[in-house]
Image (tube, rainbow, N blue to C red; front, side):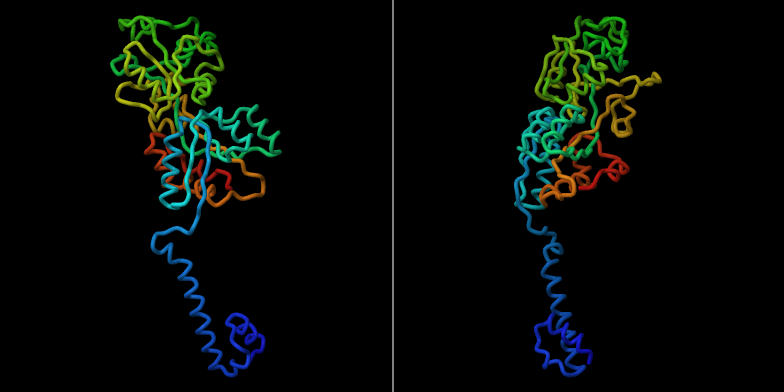
Length: 336
């Protein structure tokens, strides 16, 4: 017999060399070796066969967007259901808090409802020597809402700017302060427009300023709220109110206005228009991750990102009032 084969079998099976002296012995050893490998495979795979997951533990910390608070917590709950020893703790203190926490090293995960600006990215690079990993995790939109009984249905970008800003950087000729200045509400007998919006720490505040006001300045008489749900609630309680909020916070107490695009077509903020980007104030939601180049994430963080980018994770985004990413965007994401 082949001496090399016998030595190999001796190494794998711990059987003395002298015990393998014939082809019958060899067949017996081969069968026993195969049985050992099958049993080992079954031991490893049994948890999967019974719908269980391999052992994983740890507490994930995330700091950032309050718009994404409910979504992050739902993703965390799903992850915990799959891995009972993995927990997600989320501090919803606004998108502006995410870059600060990432730079300080108090979190590895920073959800934001807007992209990092150049200063925030620069601070991160200065601290670590590499940029943060930027992942798009869902689609959302900034919406302008009015009371459910208000007859107004659509606005131009210039009108939105003239209502909410003092600078009219989008090109409006005059400010709009009263309902009778708009054709659709000329007979709306509620006088001045009472405005509601988000506070300075919110990514929604910054993005609305950039996109809807063309980088101009907000009026100083806008009532600021810590969350989009509070904005929507305030508008729903007052017939003369208007506000801006996140798409996922719509309630029957208000209706969202369509916005005219550059071709003069009124685009409603529905799922199809938000996903395609046709709605003028559609946006991505982001998750920024501190991941050094060439390194891998710890298993718990990697499991979370895998969930988010999966079909299940995107359906959780839809159930939370957001819009799933298109397959092309998902496929183009940088892997971690």
